[in-house]
Length: 588
Image 1 (cartoon, rainbow, N blue to C red):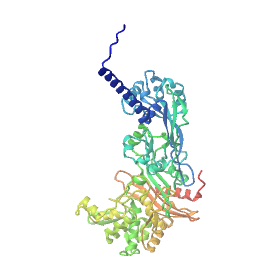
Image 2 (tube, rainbow, N blue to C red):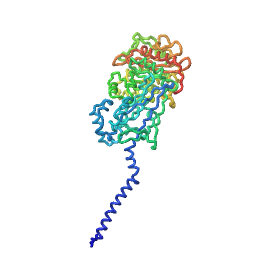
Image 3 (tube, one colour):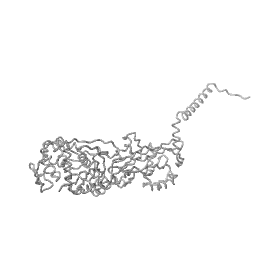
Image 4 (spheres, rainbow, N blue to C red):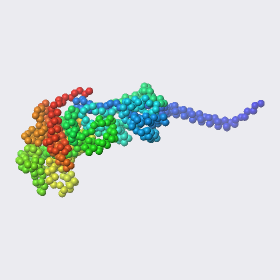
């Protein structure tokens, strides 16, 4: 007979409890995996077979006023690597020949990325790989696990006008940039952004919105194309920017000043549109594609000619004799000095124990206000400034826009400087300056500093009888009025005086006179430079026979007298404006 050993009831119950607990754990785990955390683990599973690809948006095209493309985009390819996918079979030698890095450098970089929290996402190894190199690496995809390419539209500059300081350059996004930027811009690593010029000011309009699509990949990292059952978000191109620039006149201007250091600004005085904006020397945006390489950037920064300086808005120069128009306006407004009162210019003027010279050491003889402007007589203004109230002169200069930014749509504009009593007391103490300082101020020397855009804006006011607009590049921008209320007779006098400078007999601006096609008004300037030859400048405007207007300011560093090189360049630009029909063609 068989003998059965009965299991004690308490032991049976214990086993049932243990089995029940294990079953409960198993069911709970299945519930967590399949129901509660389904989305979480489904996403991780998909990541093993589905790759999210960023589709970079094309940057908005920048046009000139005629519809010519100043910028455009062309496709290039960025080489990226997903660190966690790199294994022992990775062909570092093959990759080294394409990205110009040693095998050890690549290996060290990837191993470092593997230890970081971003080891599962693509990291940029080389930007702007050409199509031939990309095709070659794609052929050896199995030898390069983790390597992938993304298309990146890159800036190109199809127009012959450079406009480097106005357009600006691109730079790579950094982690600090992402942190500081507006979240709505939605920056990602390894993208580029507008770092200067119009590219910076209109960054939010130009950059567009990146898209996303999903690709199926296998265990060998081979891309099997778009996964059609996943939603795709196409990139949205950036908005175009239509500028006020006259690219044909810009090209002429750049060719005229290419051998000099200086700046040229030309505008429409009735609305503040910038027609020409040139700073020399400039730099070629075509010298790179995308962000600036370190070696090029270093070369620009160490160049003694300072090509990166935007002289149009950051060049601080003594305005020289062009600034005499401010005193002339005050004389006409205040009526403290009769404009017909004559001063005898002998070539010098003595104040205390100091002698102040006129540029014409032989003297101009008897001159009144109008002839003093025509011949640019310093001695006349040395004397009359002492009959004016210094604070009123300072205020008049401020009203003309000196000493503050114009508000042009470019970043980092400089303010310049108009001396006031408070400024002089702080700099020199109340006993450290005297009337002698004022004699230099009235002729645009000493502490007076102005940017080219400010001097051109002064001429905008004169050409428009005191009613112009804030300077701007955006053709579709809402006009912001900039006005100064002076008597009609003041504007009439200033316009007649600067007409005489160019078209009168022996005026200092005679080299700018146009025989046919229009009338030029203007004023020459010679800015003393303690570091070398004087700066040559000319400011004026033209009214063509078909009633078009353009103001113009030219300054050439170390160019000598204003009646020389600056005037000669100004004449050629005015002639180019006359010869060109300002017809806006259709935007393509």
